[in-house]
Image 1 (tube, rainbow, N blue to C red):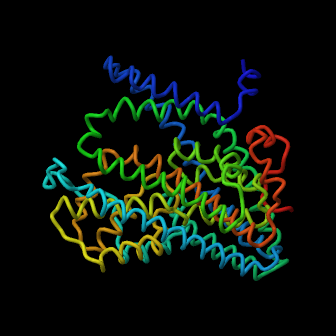
Image 2 (image 1 turned 30 degrees about the horizontal axis):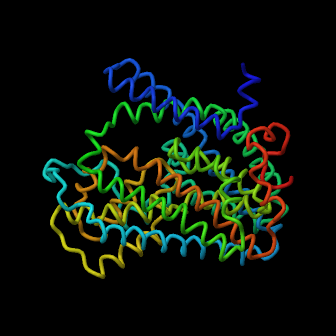
Image 3 (image 1 turned 60 degrees about the horizontal axis):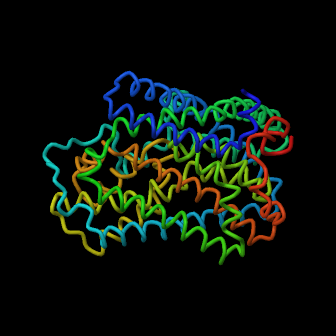
Length: 430
């Protein structure tokens, strides 16, 4: 049985889990089977919990190693700047699409919800909270609390210091490489459970959030999915074809397992090992991929930090009867491009949304209107995030002439999971 499953491509296994999860979810909802809904919730919750367990050590070691690895990359500073510029450009395109869809669809008009009944979410964000929250008061506390933004800050500082110290820091860097390999190995075991996790997550979503819940917010939900789909299947392919002179279909063949896992797990950081593996299979040099992918997994959020907050801000403004002007739309774009690190690769985009609402002076309670359907929206948002995290290093490598185009053209011909057992997992040669 196990050998038969092993012969099924990983992406097909996830698809089978998706289909079976939807079927069980509909069964649980139609027959009111509370035990089945609870079981699906438990299975999906355990899978996400296992992914989150690896996040703090994975983020820290991956970023430390990726920063130090820049020492062996030609024109490292230029690559880093180009990566950041492409992050900003794609975020600006994504938020423009979000604003455009919001103006076109008016997602908050005619919504039959009582704004007075909405309460502000427990997790909120403001520019002051964002800036002061970057630096931890206790480095151990950042890991205990799983504060990814603070962990990223610590890792960047430590990595930069190790890079400048040079050979004297090599024992510390080697330790981080070893820890990264161990964490990635354990995380790959969890990722192998993704088909079962998919079944539980999708099944619970279908069983818990029927059309009755989605109906009042159908226009908004559709706008978010359409916006993400436009970025995912139109903007990214056009950029790959025009800026990178690459066949977009080859990209999706290589990156699809990461996009699938992101959709069901709703965690950019949890998907990061698969994303990096996919990017390397697409022909991006390992030394550059080991920098761009971990950095993107914590800062590159076209779905959560661009499309969604733009649409949600327009939705909240319309529900509360607030008219937005040109300055407000420019502020939305600014927050999306500059403040995307506030999402920090974790499940959900509430902090980014409340950061946008507070910047515009809109009621934070408006975010409470959308909390009920956030898991459903987060699926497509995270898939878009991860696709962007793979697109940018691929385009940069192509424009720099370092992309292995033969590997790119054959990226989808081998299953992503199988070679992991025999290949090195540390992203930088020791």
